[in-house]
Every structure is written in C-alpha cells, then in structure tokens.
Length: 524
Image: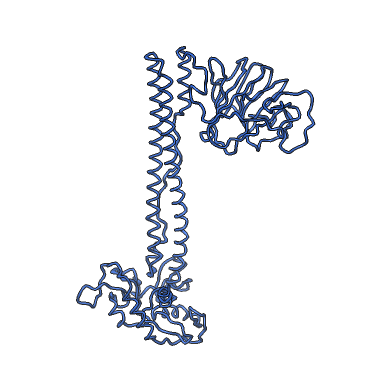
C-alpha cells in the first residue's frame, strides 16, 4: 500500500504518467516540462497564468525550475516498471534496436529512455507516444505541430491556421482539452454499451432456460403419447406417428429458433466487446488525435433478437390425439381427464370462496365451496373489494405453475366460471358491465346462458361454442407460464370446450358469476 502511495506521488497531474523531466513552479508544484509548457501556451492569449494544481495566479509567464532530485527518483521508478509490449518502433539514435518510449514531432524522431533524458525540452519539441506515422500529427499547410482543436470545423489545427490561416477567428481549445472531452463521451458510450451487453447476456440466459424447459416438456409429451397408445395397437399407429411427428417438429422448431436467437446475440455481443475494447484503448492514450478520431460512431448493424415462438403446442397435440381416440371408440374406460392425459401438475383442491369479495346478491355456503344467486340481499359490510354484481372470487391466487380444479354447475339459466386479476373493476352494476367476468382485459371466463355457451373474450380463445345443454361439471386447467387457460366438459366422453391464450401479468384468482337462481360448487 505504501509503495502504491509513493507511485501516485510521482505522477504528473496533467498527463497522469510518471514525471518526464520534471520542473517546478514557484508555488512548489511539479509537472512534466512538456505538460506545463502546453498548459502555459494555452493561457498565453488570456494574459493570466495559473497553476493546474493549486490555481495560483501569475501576472507573467512563470519561470520553471528543473527538479533534479525528483527526476532521479522518477527515472529509477520507471526502470523498475514492467517492460511495455514491443511496439515495433525503435530509437532513431541507437545503433541497436532499442524500443522507443517517445516520438518528437519537431525532430520527427523516436527516442528511447536514454535519449529522451538528453532531448531538448523547448516548447516546439512535442513528445508523444511512439509512432511511425507523423504526417497526421502536423498541419498539411504550415507543417507545424497540431496544437489546437477548431470547434467550428471539428478538426485539429496548428497555431498558424488559427492566427492567420483558414480558421482565423474560430473558437478553439487546446488539443489535450478536446481529447479529454472526447474521452468523457467515449466513457459514457462505454457504459451504455456495457449495459446493452449485460441485457443481451441476460436474454441469452433466458433462451438457454427456455430451450431446456421446452426440451424437457416435449420429452414428457413423448412418454404421454406412448402410454396413451400402449393398449390400442396397430389401428392407432397412424395417429401415434402423427402425434410424435408434431412433437418432433415442436422440438426442432423451438431448437432452431433458440439457436438463431443465441447466434444473433453472440454476434452482437462480439461487436459490442470489440467496440468496448477500442474505447478502453482510446481512453488510455495520451495522443489526442486517435482519441478524437475514435469518437466517430461505428456501425454495429441491426440484429433482430426478438423471441420466436413455436408453431405447435404440446397440449394441443395431446388434445388432438384424445379426439381421434374417442372418435374411434378404442379408449375403453379412459374417462378421467386428469389421470389419463396428465393435464396438470398441481390439483387445486383447497380453493375457497372469499366472502370479502362476494356481492350481497350472492349467497355462500358455510364451507365456502358453493355460491348461488340469492333473492334476499345479504347485509355484509361495505368493502372496497366487494362486487356490486352477482360475483365472487376465490381466496387462492395462482402466479406460477400448472393447476387443475373442477366445478359442479346448475342447469339453470346463467352462470360464468373463470379467472380474474385482483385489479378487476368491482363497482359496475349491469350484468354486461366492465366488472363482469370476461367482459374486460382483467378476466377470462366460460359463460353459460339458457342452454347456450361461449367463452369470453372471444378474441383470445379457440374451441367450440354454441348450444350444448346439461353441462353439469367443468374441468379448468391453467398453465400460468404458458399463458393458457382451458375448459373441459367432464363426463363420458370428456370434451374440450375452449382455450384462452394470453400473457398473464398478475396473480389469477378463480372467479364465479351466478344469476337467475344459478349456482356453482367447487369440488373437494
């Protein structure tokens, strides 16, 4: 820790590197001779000179004094630093190939450590990092060192360009100051690219997880299909092959889409990494020219990383198989939708009706499993969550996973069974108002009226609807992550009624509507 502190004390506050030929102002602060020379040059026009460290003012250009002791210490520390990577640029004055540490723009010569110490420190001798390309460091017109940056024309110029040349009267600043501003912009760009890269990496991780889940789910689907057809024989071979082919297509299509997305993300991540590396390199340079050139935007191209969805859905495939099996009358006793077809993972048998949400027009049983339309208004306390129409929610919320439960229903005129967010409107009075299950974007339901039924909202569901009397028992299946809600008529045979597809954004509660002496009962 102590050696690190000493190392910091030997850094020039202008270039932030170890002192090169350190000199001292009368205020006692030290700088590289070339660095303080550039600073004082930039202050010539103002006529007032200040120390970059303590801001002490001098009425005349201050005299600098060489600090021999500090110079010896800096040279010894420099000799103990790790050798820099060979740049391929060698000292002009050495007979042997000795790597250069500085290039003088005035002399157009590269210098090693030994010759830098002996080199002239006058203002016109500008030392920069070793380079073989000097043409772009000097003005093409006046052959003078580029010292200023013209803001109006956005280019580097020499003193003659500013005083008597094409840039006369333009607003300029010292080239080092301009480079620092560019570095600041580059660092901001670097942070933005870093955040974008992190987002891409997160998306890649999600794609990996999604692909693994789909593969696992599809593998389970293959087992279900094999079990379903184990006792049917050759008459069902065509249906079996079709189902397995669809599942194979599901796996293949999802794998291809996931691979494309991951490849796209990798391409853009590589581009971002390359740009970030370039920015880090530019920010570490002391030579301002390549730093300013590095601000020009680099076209990273547009890469589409939108999610791609598969054409098939596993439950659709299984339902198609079930329909074919029932049509051929070869199932023989397959009446339990839950057990035979593996339609759920969690059986929701602990659903109760929430009395705090029940309308005063709805009567609830003591065990909170039955809701019925009541001609007598209950005198429940007013609560913000209570419905004004004949509706009630369940106490259990589903925010993830797959769930299945069953509901017995009356054959009387009107009831609705479904799911709703807690944020559903509670205050509408009319039956077809905003708060009715399925009449808003906060709920989905299966609606039965006088022997006819439909699923609402229509735009997000598929399945049959129309006349189908005597629905005595419903099976409800929810796959939250897949955005799937399905309704089945239970009996012999089991019949698929409707399926909603949506992106669920809030926890879902079982929801029930009863009217005209209708009732529903949650099965235990």
